[in-house]
Image 1: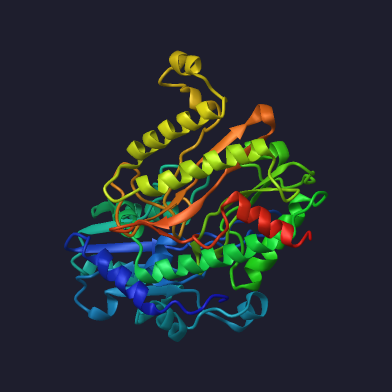
Image 2: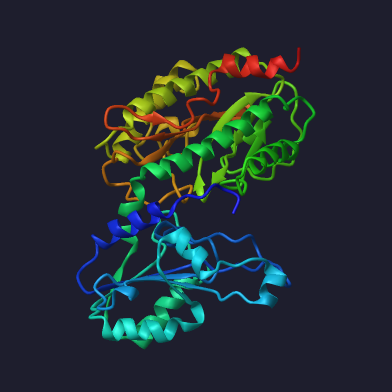
Length: 434
């Protein structure tokens, strides 16, 4: 574990709030994610299931959590299942959690080796007064599932084995719980943002004409891992020149040239919590007049968005307001004119040629975190704010992104210390050139 101990209190609190949402006579099962294969005998880096982590803090493969609040024997109201360590396994894979260590992390007192799952689970389902079995699925609005997950296999097995129980979805409940962050979660996300800031400042002192995009990526990952992060929160976008009009450019293979802009959409995770930063900087250390003109237009929208994304607002209403601001800025920049607006259709508004993505998404254990985008924005939720203007014919794009906690009286910007003013970025970049 690279990060500081989180404390079992967060996970105990998360389970208590979950239990309050369940129907009487309920049992909930959370499965860890699979270890995904690459080729031959290779595997990809392990990513824990966010919901299992949320209720337990356990970051280990082949783990399960079963919660049965009304079970007669209190010992089995919360059970954590783990792989049983053995000498051979630890020679090849390293240390695995002991029962005592798992309890210290999760606050779950009853820890059972996963080999004993089916026997104990049968006892709980049949002898615990269980009518409702809550199982997990990935219901994120952007999800495009292409492989059968561990959860999906478990659903098949459970429904075949116990066909007469009433099955329910836990995903809507987890979505509701996870979108409002607890104070400890905010602390961890702030740490992820602080690490991201260190990486960004390092890069400001590194970028120069002739450097490769992948070299800049290496500067980020060095700083992130040095400070206790596992690494990137998502695949980094290091996009110079005309590459920065491509939203998900991830090759990071080109050379940075004098006069170009460099769009950096790259951020760190910390303790499985994510940050999400975008900045656009001049490779030569100074924006051209036109680049700064567009940059400041994006920054004005960014600041207005900070004021508009408030409690009880519905995201899609907020997005429409941002689009009105964008239309006005694009008119000032002479990228569109009044004739374009008169001719536009609702399906293809004029602004969309230069701004073709949403302004915000929720953030947390997942970069595009769970939560119903049609619900009102809630106090304590964390959102990105990331407007952008992309001008293909001028071969550059600009996006600026910060992470904010929605507050009752005002929002709290987790990235307020990260340079965003064009002049401040120029000043920092030119300090190392002098």
